[in-house]
Image (cartoon, rainbow, N blue to C red; front, side):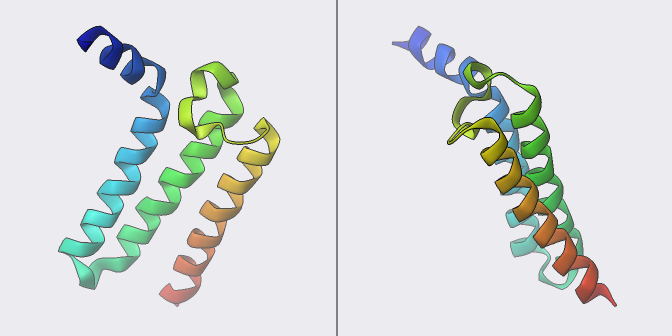
Length: 93
């Protein structure tokens, strides 16, 4: 049973890295509510990293980042990360 868990972790390492980045951004937003610009910036970086990982890795290695076709996933991650970053930059001014 433990071997199966380690195998799952090895298959999902890309997804777990992105998930850790998103979770860290949300925790930062909860702990430091006055510093929301850094938190949203970290969130957008995690989503843009997800797009890069989904574009570069084959479907078998992308884990749960692979939901649809490669280009559709990459486009959705880029769009969401870009929108969060654009709103973050717009609200800074």
